[in-house]
Length: 308
Ligand SMILES: Nc1ncnc2c1ncn2[C@@H]1O[C@H](COP(=O)(O)OP(=O)(O)OP(=O)(O)O)[C@@H](O)[C@H]1O
Image 1 (cartoon, rainbow, N blue to C red):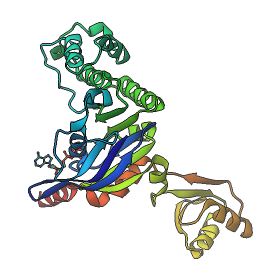
Image 2: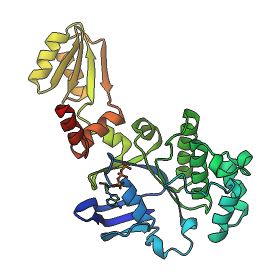
Image 3: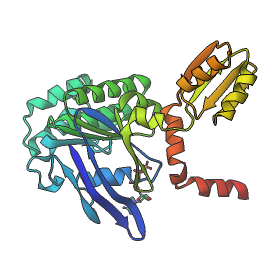
Image 4: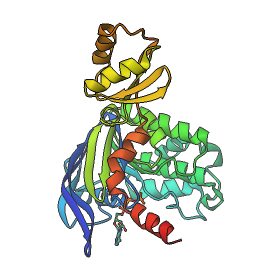
């Protein structure tokens, strides 16, 4: 488990991470989202003791990372896929990491197998593709068989096959009861992979909730109603306080009333229904709405455009 308690990081006048308090629990994949510059990497670096908090604490299994006796056996992380020396082979690199962290060298072949690099274990990492580099980074994170895993943009540069492989790996690590904390900008991927989402905006916590809850909280969720009496029904729904959009002659998109309420009203109005179905937004749409006011660079970009 990872615990953040009032975690804050300032760089001069800039507050990169602002008073974060939350627990990232085992047995699930927690997605870590936020616009560029929101403070995700800084948070992860503080959890790993690579940055000192200005105030507050980041705890791994109840203790600050820097006090862990065998850190790699407690928490594995992929922060920078290019961490291996290019002249070392994959096996030599991992063996050195294992030796210097008191991890049995027998783990090296196991993790190479897990990440699908067994056949290129003797190749220098400098010749690796971006995807192979990501896999090697993940192998390094798994080496100490830790209960806590953190991945910063693990699918960056991976082909669709690699993306699916990472998704399955995350899910299986969580199913084994581990804490899996993963940052990503790929909303469709997070919708498939994560159970819980932690969303940051300008260093502040915007949401800490199950994926379904984040999606359900979007104002874009609507009920699709198809009826030959759509116009008349639309008028009645609006009178009951719904926001009604007439999508076609026989189709309405209704927000602000439950599907049950709409069904009952249609019945009272003796309107024939051809369809009454919920239309959920994607995580991407819910996320855009949630973070709309936290996008650091959007205003600047728009301003520039205006000037051009
Ligand atoms: N060493 C540093 N010195 C000064 N400012 C920094 C430093 N590291 C990060 N920042 C600033 O802190 C803020 C948070 O950055 P961070 O890299 O944690 O965001 P992020 O959410 O990981 O962004 P991205 O999605 O682009 O990776 C940014 O405004 C960044 O410019």
